[in-house]
Amino acid sequence: MKHVFKATKLGWEKEVIWFDSYDYTAQEARDEFKPYEGTTQRGYSYTGYEYDGQKYHDVTYLGEFEDDEVPHNDLELLDYRLRHFKK
Image 1 (cartoon, rainbow, N blue to C red):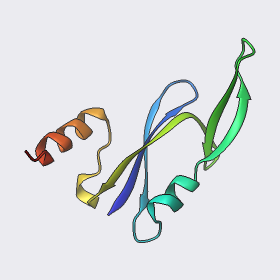
Image 2: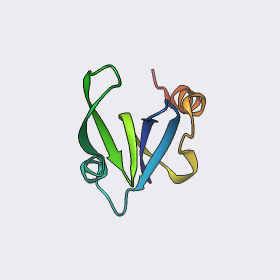
Image 3: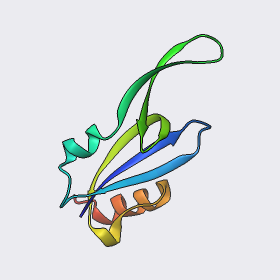
């Protein structure tokens, strides 16, 4: 099992980041993303997140997934949710 996050890097590239559920709780995985304060080129302040030397605009927790069902992009996430949707 893996805790899966979707993050937007500076430059707007999307990335999927995961943490092994056997090593991290969901909260411990969230805590790996350290907030920092930045300023845009136009002087606006913002809060970003840093993990493993990379800076991100935003980070979203997608949930816990089986190892063979980890989504790698939005289309795979949508497909997963449609397959697991229960009425």
